[in-house]
Image (cartoon, rainbow over all chains, first blue to last red; front, side, top):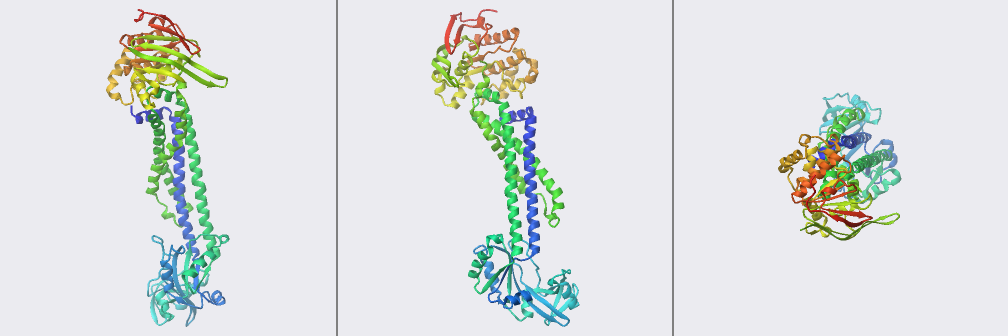
Length: 381
Length: 232
């Protein structure tokens, strides 16, 4: 008689025990799949929120007048644009960062007032990551709300700036900050207008050390960056960096806590159900031995049952977890709701791992039972 | 020809109150075609003897030979194979698998490598002979005690083993069912099989070619009978 036939018959006979085991495994898989999908969504959401907070790392020319910097909002000195490329080439060697952007920023007088002209280089981002900040085509401008009024410009219209004609690509919504008087241009265009070819006055980045201030990230950043780019200095926007680091560490700690917790509870439950099952079946173990069946076949019967229930639970649990995440995820993570979708890779992992996990959880009780003396249950004397 | 032999077999069990002698220097030779009963009070070591003879319980000392093989000198896998090939067990509590029907329980008695499909017709035939033809697809829970024991007997007989070891096979049966079980065992013996029955009652006496008494692990022969069982 094939082990599968025996396993299926036994599962049906002890259906309540089997059902509870399968339900617990299903719940565990559903929970883990839902946690994983929503954790991914939370990470995307966090990333988006953090990105919206802005850059937290500013690399500026050494010797910048600090009073000028903080009163005007940009360094009084410039540095070569090649610094940004050089830094990008060192990614992963000296330090980690995301979204590297070179800027040239200066106040620029107009007939009816003053704006901040900001040239922005295309963002250098990790593959697959959406570039941070504005991506401005050459010959185009993004205008802050008030800047658009000063220039009397509207979206889609041409506008004159520094003797050149630009197309207004976007007029930004009123922000209530100095961004309202900014005129964003491609870096090359800003360099031409300001007559500073090949120069920038700041490199902005998001550091990925993800250390909080008590872990002194600035010292590490300064040590690596000043070695890499002599003639520069580093400013770390501590509040933003701390918020980012704390959020990331919190997410990692939450996953490090919740995933093992679910796994341990599920393993204990499956193990307990396996103990009950093998206790119920002690005389059966003795009988199989009397009939000449070896330990391998008995192990197959017990672990095979656990694996089969695990396979069933993985299908059900992965489906349930995905449905739960799709049903409730979008209401929790509004900004990135559309990105919450089913994850075939995750389901595949669940299908492979759950039967193995269930067999592993049943392994100890099964081995204990098989190594005990089940023939005691056969004696009449 | 010797079917089973024990050479100075002892089995000791450690307990809180010291060592318990389950079997004490047991010497026994059972020829093929014999029907042997071993009687003794509860706790005298009858089940220990039977399980030791069947390769299920390693003795503390001594040697057991079954069908010419030194049972406990064999590695576990070969011992299991020997057991599957040579021994049919019948237990007092039947030990039918509750999740299999009658026919499947009988087929479960086949050696692991056998094909149940090949033996299906034989198993149904056997059930018919044992008066269970209409119970082939019933589960053990729906059978009477006598029927369950006959299923267990069919399970032991299906593979046509040289030896059947029965541990109080009628302990849970009424006299009519008990007689029926012994008749089937006697029929097996008449066809050349060897039967060893451990029991504490006299029901099997009239079928026995030899009777032994087991007392505190010591085995002694009661008296000799003719090789053939007495007619009913």
